[in-house]
Image (cartoon, rainbow, N blue to C red; front, side, top):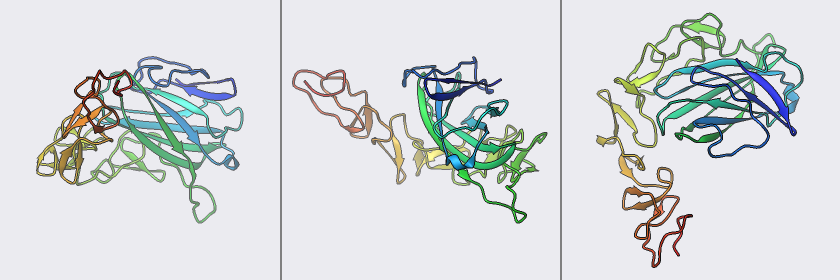
Length: 280
């Protein structure tokens, strides 16, 4: 069940998708890091001339269940404006997995815009995602197409048409179909999720291919946490390491002998490493 509130000039939505354990309304003030545990803080952006009255939101988390779709607000009461936000609470999901969010903008129950985005989940933290809604193309009769959610559909939805679940049309519950990447997946499972063997599809940063049901980086195993698969080799980079890199090993970056942040090379400090990962 979704609800909508306004506060201090900020319109906000909150709700209870499949992965959510609790309902939480947003307020204008929030801790950008640990406001609500593991969550996505989604900002919507669109051209005000679209005259949106509602949005339909759904998505999925790598290796987990899909959430949504949910229409926000439940009843159209006013025109929406660019910058409105919503929070998706993800509950107990693995750190570092990819979350995907899809959105459709509605005007009087008709889909007039779409957008999508994603982020890497941080366990216990709120990750910001911005979804840009773009106007959809029109059909020859001049009306927008049927959208990407099909009511009463066991499979997935392509331009308003229910389609059976296959490798090229992967999804269940009427959500938008996705095409599994043959380089990173070898099947679409019964949940409508692209998989490599019995595991989720291989995703950046730690792997670049699915081989015999196993995620791999080049000809070797998938990379360890803190590493990124770059040109078939595991490396410590700014994308994979929030601390510092000692060779291709990601260090916390908070000790005198290995101090640093942002994936830069670790340095030896003379006196110690400050809380902000700089030497003193």
